[in-house]
Length: 418
Image 1 (cartoon, rainbow, N blue to C red):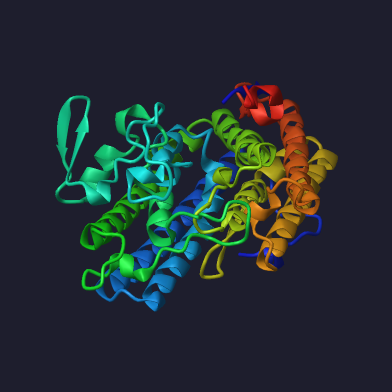
Image 2 (image 1 turned 90 degrees about the vertical axis):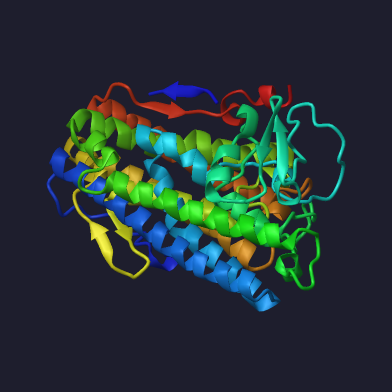
C-alpha cells in the first residue's frame, strides 16, 4: 500500500452535531482512549459469547447450534469493526491487529476446499489443510500439528511470511463456520453443514480436528482481545502512547480516521473489489456480512470524530472530541466534516438496506449490475470526500506527521491490472 501525506442506522443522530465540551486536548484524548477501551471490552464480551456458542456446536452438532454460532460471530463483528478507527496511527494496535482481522486468506491452509489443488507458486501452503494433517513440512522442518492448540495456530499464522496464510482471528473462524462461498457473484453465502463437526456422522473428514481448530481459534481470539483491553486500560501502552503528548495523540487519532476512511475502506475493501468484479475481495466473504462490516467501520470513524460510542448494552461513552478540536479553529469546517460523515453513513446504510432486502454485496460487484455498482461507488465517493476534509482539518490544526494510507485502486488504478 502507498501513503498520501497530508448499533444501527436508527441509533445515529444524523442532525448537526452540537459540541457541549471545551476542546481541551488532554480531555479529548482521554475520551478517545475511553472509547477505544469500551469498544475492545464489547468485542471481548461478544467473543466470549461466541465461545459459548462454539462449545454448544462442537458438543452437540446440529443445524440449530451451527446457526447459533454463526449469529454469535455476526454479533461479535459489530463492536470490533468500530474499533478499526484506532488502527494505523496507534503502533500497538498496528502490531496486534493482524492476528485478529487479517484478510483475505487462502482458506485451504485451514481446511478442505473445492477446486484446483495444483501447485500455487505464490503460496505453497495454499492447500496445506491443517485440519487434515497432523504434521507440516516448513523450510525443511517438520511441525507437529497433532494437537490443534492456540499456540500451534499462533505459530502457523502468516506461515513462511506469506500474508495470505491466515490461521487465526475472525476470518479463520468465519471460514470454519460457513465454509467457502462458491456462489461467485450470485446470491448466497458459504454452506458448511453442521455434520462437518459431528464425529459420529462426519462429513468432510477430520471432524474432531475441525472442532479442535474452531475451539482453539476462538480461545485465541479471546486471549488477543484481552490483550487489547489491557492495552487501553489505565496502565496500558496504547492509552499511554496517545495521551503522553497532546500533539502526537492528535496525529494518531487523525491518522486512524483518515487511513481507515481512504486507503483501507474506500480503497482496499471497496474500490478494489469493484474494479476487479471479484467477490474474493469481500471483507466478510464467507458469511456475506460485508455490508455490515463496511457499515460499522464507517460508524467507528464517526464515533472517533464525534467522541461518542454506544455500547452493546445501550450505555454511551462520550466526552470532548476531535470535532471540538476542529471547531475551536473553524466551526464551518467542523460541521462540514460531521455532515460528510453523516452522508457516508447514509451511503453505507443504503448498501446495508439493499443487502438485507436480498441483494448481497457480492452481487453488487457483479459485472453489469449498474445499480449495485452505483451503491458501492457512492459510498466510496463519500468516504473519499470526508477524507479530504479530514486532511483540511489536519492542516488547519497544524499537525505534522499525519500520513493517510492510500490504495492503488484510488491513486493509481492502472497498477491494479499490472
